[in-house]
Length: 317
Image (spheres, rainbow, N blue to C red):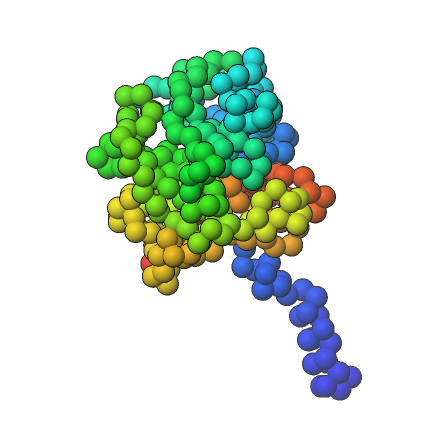
């Protein structure tokens, strides 16, 4: 066989076995089993070492796991319904994009009530001593938005700074991602201030999640379009700041208020539109928890390890 023929065969073989640039850029979701159909997941590790996931669905859906691999359905947050939300949902029981944390001996759950494409929206707070279905108490309205507002009060996330101050980020489309201060005693809004922390000039940005690591606060967001099954174009972006109120800059120094963001995860192969991300801290490090769509359009739970490069920027493995 000629050298030219051997070279041609080797090149053809390389094309078959070499991963594409797209596949190499982002890892596949880690292995999960059981009840893993989720949308807009938030996750927490409980004091007993088990895991609790809450996600978008009728009355907010709960799932549990003992090992972060096998998940089972655990009912809903509000099995009796949440009548206080229906003025924002048009009567629907479907509640969106929860955020869960465990502070001061109880679980805190911020969640959204709205209808698709509208900024007549609200964020509410509930608390529970256990996190289990039916144990949640409605604590009140945190913030609402009206059609006359330039923001959308959905997709909440709580972050507590080094001084013990509570902050809630939120936002979807309109003028972007906002930040308000909360009263730690009640979990409800403190004052009337509102800070803009990220925006794309009215473009598609939502699902903020802020976490402090080292000297920086990292702001994760989802760019582009959700909720279109395998046609979704969601992708996870990040910026960072030395202050919780910003300014948040991406790796290239572009402010997130000016459309900046460094890509952490995007669609690849059979993973479509990954986003609605949350960061879960565990004994083996940080994890990114998110949803993505399979080829058939089903929304599924994604979990990947988060590491940080030499410059302190997060990346998935």
